Image (cartoon, rainbow, N blue to C red; front, side, top):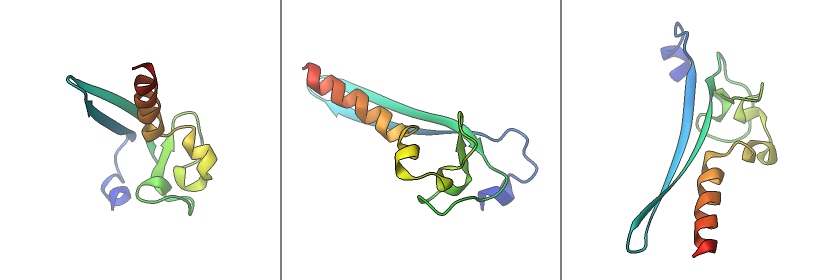
Length: 91
């Protein structure tokens, strides 16, 4: 897996990105990012995919160690959706 491929990698920076596209006569794009790093080992049972190996900046826990409420504070999807919802409310 990824941890095996990155065994000797010093730069473990990583980014989750979400992009929402919306067309209403003109294309609009809404982005959300969560920057962090890839851990040296898997930790936690929560979430899915890369959650057990991704540590967002500002935390010492992987997403896999966080409960949903805590993980949502960092959510790249949530950030993109929040921007999209704000746009829709202002129309």
